[in-house]
Length: 299
Image (cartoon, rainbow, N blue to C red; front, side, top):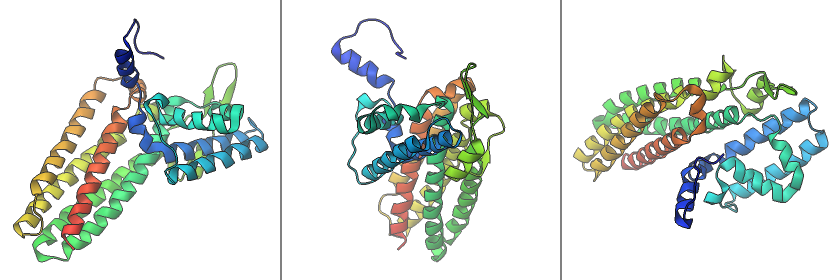
C-alpha cells in the first residue's frame, strides 16, 4: 500500500519509493526468510493444502536459491522493496505460478516477527562465540583478567536474551473467516529449531521486547569493550581506544532511539516498520567488529 498521494517529480518519486522499502536492511535476513518459507511450505503439504509434488518442486528451487545466495550470485535493488518480495520475484521467474503457493495462509506480521527472531538467534549465538573467545584471551593476561569477569557477565546476559528470543510468534489459526487454516506452530518450532511458542499470538507478532533486550545487552557489553580498549591502550597494544568508545556511544544511541520509537506505537503496528531490524543489525555488526579487533589485540 502506498503511503502517499499526489504527484511527484521523478526524483521525488524515487525518494518516496525508497522511503517505504526495507531491502537495504532486511537483505541481511535472506537466509532466514528462505528457511522460514521452506518450513511454511512443508507445513502446507503436511496439512494437505498443497500437494507433496508441488511442495517438493518448490523446495528444490528454494534450496538452489539458497546455494546461489551463499555463493554471492544474487544481487538486490531498491525495486525489490523487501527481502521476501525479492525472493518471491526470483522464484516466480524460476518456477512460475507455483511460487504463489509459498504465501498461502502466510500472516505477514507473524512471519516478519519469526524471521526477525530467527536472525537474532543466530546473531546472538555468533556473538556468544566471539565473546567467549575474547573472555579467554582476557583472562590469560594479568592486566586484563578483571575484564574477563565483566565479559562473563555479558555472556550470561546474552544467554538470557537468547532464551527470550527463542520463541515462535504464531497462533493456531489464520486466514479469512470463510476459509480458516490451522497453523501448526509446534511443527514450525521443530523444523526451525526454536524451543517454545509465544503465549499470545497477537503479542508475539508485535512484541519487540527481545530486540530492546538485545540492544540493552549490547550497550552494556560495548561499555565493557570500551573500558577494555582503554586498558589495552595503556598497555601499548591498542592504538585508538576512542574508536571503540565512539562505537559504544553509537550503540547506546540505537537503544534509546528504538525505545523512543516503540513507546509511541501500539504493539500491532510495530511489525509494520523496519527501524527495529535496522537497529539490531547495526548493533550486532558494530559489536562484532569491536570484539574481533580486541581479540586480535590480545593475541
